[in-house]
Length: 164
Image (tube, rainbow, N blue to C red; front, side, top):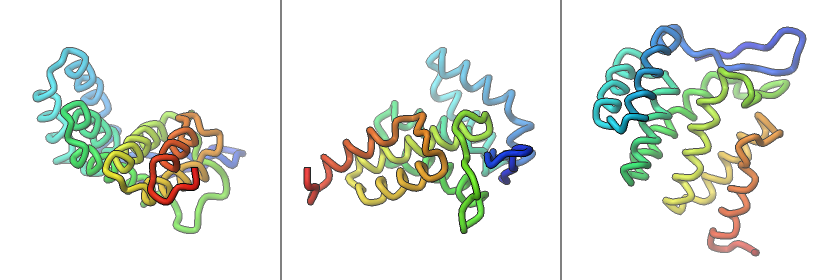
């Protein structure tokens, strides 16, 4: 995983590894399987895709979504968390001199998996970590297209020691 600056801009986009770009058509097939309710087959396909490409954020995101549908919040957290770590690891530790907008195609799976991670952390009562992750995501894209501030407010109201 890497990132690139859009030409003449302060906007950045995550660039999936070559193995993930080569498997993009496979993800579309998995999405068709999911739409048809073929969850087990989709899971097998996603695991196979990850076996050859462990930094495939889209595959981790979909496995997290399937785990949530099956009620396994801890497994979902694992997949969403791994996707978040892959994306963050690709970015400079000192931060970007600009934004990583959700609206760019290369960033969407990262943000959607990251929001899934925050929801799982909330469900698992890991409020502090959820709030830290939300703060990090809002620094990357302050426009908040996934309504993370709303989730942040819900977590603050729910967490012990909250002043609300």
